[in-house]
Length: 340
Image (tube, rainbow, N blue to C red):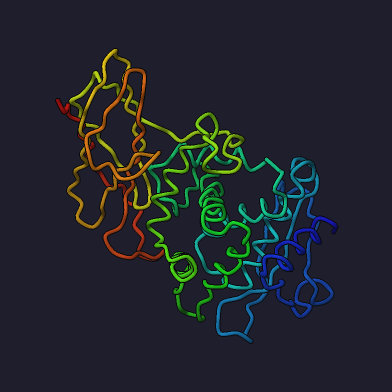
């Protein structure tokens, strides 16, 4: 009960989420929010009770079930409670989004309630190992990719909303859609929030986030994520030595995914080279950037024993929302040539 009250204080009273809906006694003895201690489920979940006919949008009353024994009931009980309680609050605004949006958001929320807890760090492994997957991809094979996509919300918090974690509650409120309608959805709400409140496009934030995700663990530089040095999983990267140039590196990625290429000069003299991306896909664009700066528009120069890391991000040619966002892999070539 104490942990639930801690989550309520942060997420409802501070962030501004609407409180869980009264279930009118259809679950439990009264309309209060119900949490069932359920030994044997080895985890926790939130499930709907009834929709709310008093509103035009798709909100639901819910209940929580949680197993307080074993792993969940030990060191992780506080964050499990915060995570599941956020699902209950998401249901007050919109209970019809894709699982990725719910899980990334609830993982972000648990870190707002308990910022010193580290148990979600292991989830970064799957996310960082698969940068070619879309930021909004829901993959059930690795289990944890969708959860650790919360890294993007941490980026938004630190980059655009410092001191204003309530942006996350406003984001979910923006997903409210009338019964029978799919829009606005999470991506619509995210795009609208960023443009109206910060004057930045969704695509621009995703591009910059892809740069930021390089700077964690051993590559933390103190200028990106506040806890980057503590986050234990670096992003997957393909290595090329300048001695291999000219070379063509094949790439594939989903929309809002990326490839990371590290070019290293192990020789004794500086090397100049060009980098160009080519693709036959007309409905996407491939953006080539240096993770430490910006777009690559001129030949690169590598000094001896130095390296440069490129990130190549796939962006849609037109606006997308969850319903028309394709997760088909796209292909392109990164061609590196010598520049005398």
